[in-house]
Image (cartoon, rainbow, N blue to C red; front, side):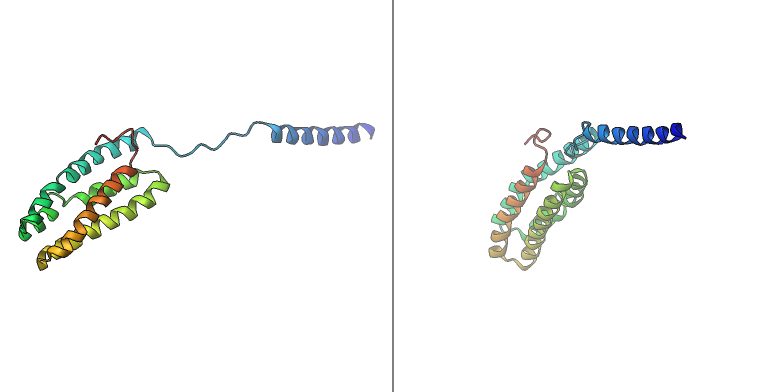
Length: 153
């Protein structure tokens, strides 16, 4: 009888000691999310394409200055036609906190380009003159959001 009580007390003490020691142990700290090598490779691949499109925006500016409305539209839907896909591919590989911001900047950029296209149809130089600088700023803001070690601009 004494042995069975002793055994149950001993088991209880050992259980409490185990719980106490486990709670005093070093907990693994949560690491901030980081980019995987595959994600970085994808970001780098699509960033190179988006950067080329950004560099070509000066061509669009020349078309706007020349008031060549047909080619303004053609440029937006031609050389810049895959911009949405490229930016979406980058956004999918960004860290969660950057994805939200990247999506908003991309929406702003696409809205600016759509408004430039619409203004070109209407031959509205004033509207284009407002949206073109905004599109450049959005482009640059999006590119600045990307992992700096992997972007070469």
